[in-house]
Length: 389
Image (cartoon, rainbow, N blue to C red; front, side, top):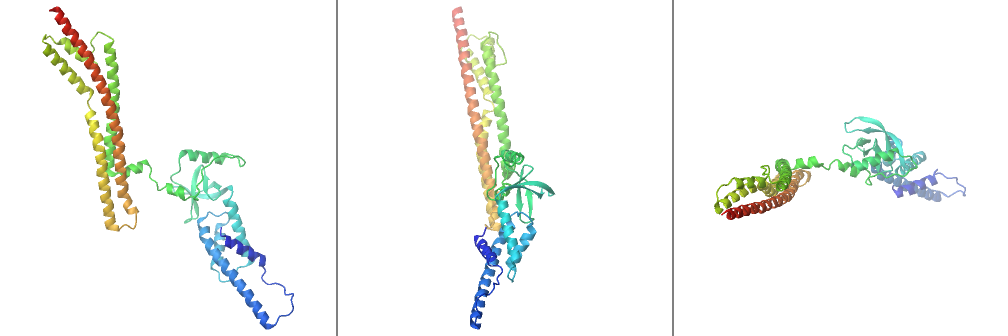
């Protein structure tokens, strides 16, 4: 509050009424004129101080959700700020009462009945919890005061669910109970800025066509990585089952390679080596399928992000050329696209690279396992053949 106005207001109330009883001796005309000039000067200074202080309070009264009759208090302030006559003592007392009422409301937690505009535009009378001059809560949702319509407005986008839950619990506790609740120290400005912060869906939409293409490729690559991970896990289990039995099973790479080796009737060592090498190569290709595509997507995604960055900057420069650089909002679309596509490209490439490395390691382990057991089987067959000779 304006401390200068408080001081002048208290001084005015202390000096009212202005006319005092004359107890001194009769003054001479020059002395009387001097006395009159002094009193007029004092009243003029007091009048100017009241007008100046009332003018300083007008913006504050316009931005605050006033307690009591807001229209009457603002009208009184307009009268004191614009009037060309010395205000009456009753008007100053009424303003003093208004200031005291606002101070009490700003420093306490209270429940009031007030019309609240919902996001649909409908005004509904609700029980509003007023947290001093910081925040307003109704039905567990945060409100903001709109000076343009002099009404409380429910924010279309609310804070995090944890903050909303604490607000609901705070409304239900007794007045004498301590409970945590989140407040906005800026008096509602920070909460109103939440409406302008885009959510995840809006962020993705800022990426444009390039961002959608990156997400499609990333989604397909993630799904393919999950499928290959499950497939290689099942292949590893089947190979272990094959090692635990002497029967050749064709549902696993080791069983298929051993089956080809068993079906080979040639006795030439080179022919056996070629048969085993061909079978192992075929199984390795099956194990490593789709890994080349994952590696390609991991390399393309950052480049698509760079493409989105370039196109976004082109749009920004076009907006500057058409409208100038005076309004940053005109350039925000292109800058957002440039940054969002870069982020999407990196978000897509980094996990895919990790998946590719993980799957490649599993394929190599399974390939080494195949080579070891097939080499042992081939050596055993050649040993049996030499023994037979």
